[in-house]
Length: 364
Ligand SMILES: Cc1cc2nc3c(=O)[nH]c(=O)nc-3n(C[C@H](O)[C@H](O)[C@H](O)COP(=O)(O)O)c2cc1C
Image (cartoon, rainbow, N blue to C red; front, side, top):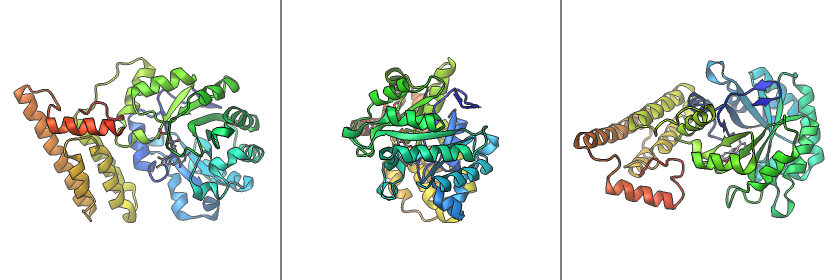
């Protein structure tokens, strides 16, 4: 797939997520086959004011891998200056957020609120386009509309493309839906149909499994799929999708040994790159993601949030996975099927009913 002059390899894209897609998280997803990762949305106003806290979130991907900086704002010239900063930081693409439903953003009349002001949104896209070198495309991430009664995704997307956008990502919900209710795939298909062929359309929303990925592709005709929440603690979803797109054999579900190694790599990246102030919080969050749906995970999470030292959280994680590994070894010795444990099955069934296990289909 090409975004303007930028060639993107096979695989799903990692969605921008505030307080989630930091450097450690992006690195893990890239190492598992994400074709491209995005920073969380960064306020153009804060960037141009020089807020250190926000500027450091433009952290370039490790190993020289390409990455996207997403900016949010309302003032075209401020967004243009922020985009220049993103380019200086090494972004290969600058994405403009026109989909965030949060009141703190829409009250400032940016994010999804721009879908109600297509004329201003178009001025923003052309200002950012004009500020960047031709080698760096501008893209837009939008929703399907503000509310059920104002679905304007295809017209809006076309207008953004006419203003200079080289790719459109569509989250298949309205702003009023927030993150609830059904994802609507028909408006994403309508965006694909409305745009010139050379402009890629990315389908986004509720892709938690390989089946969801196939459905998104089939029902929308989108050129690529973007994954957000399901990537938390499950980077293997990127590995599976990349295998599908390259015609390779889809790898087996990760073993406990593998899950432990990837959690530990993630935790080590947090130790290395996260500020002293945030380290404990990030380690707790990371372990909670990787233990979801695993035997003893709920109990672990209760204990993790009582720990007050980063090293203690890592020790807890190591102990947790060591027990799971020992259980797996014992089962292998007795020839018992993996995850035959009644309690684990009950928990898995319960989580699946609550829709919390869609992204870890191998559990239970
Ligand atoms: C915690 C969280 C933070 C998010 N932050 C952003 C953001 O910074 N920029 C953005 O465009 N979308 C943001 N989103 C929306 C996601 O990028 C994505 O569109 C949405 O979660 C639907 O995809 P999913 O079902 O695969 O998660 C966020 C979503 C979540 C859950």
